[in-house]
Image 1: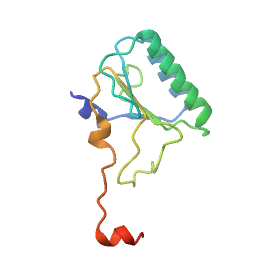
Image 2: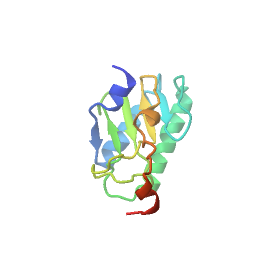
Image 3: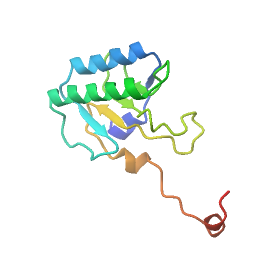
Image 4: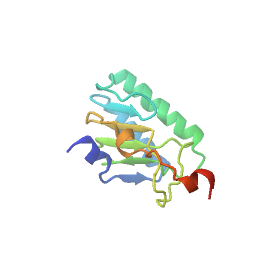
Length: 140
């Protein structure tokens, strides 16, 4: 299965903080052969070093714990909770419209995968909108 198919595949949302911390601990305890794609940065071309991977997981956990002021998690998704191979994590301060009605849902900030990443930002990110004559001058 290619990266785009995995990205658009079935994920389980993690609602409980305890489950989120368990997932992050699972990743931390198995630090080999992971790609960490921060979609606000350059796409990685090789797996992350194990020590660097653990540091990155700790940084993400710290951001989630300090900046997501909700009783529930709801911004971490995994393809498999016990044996994950692809995890999507949204930044708490960049959620946009998450109710599903948005034409362009927000992009996860961190994509953690065993599969080598492809450019999901170019493929699935918001497209440039062309403004017609009327909409250019009249904002509705």
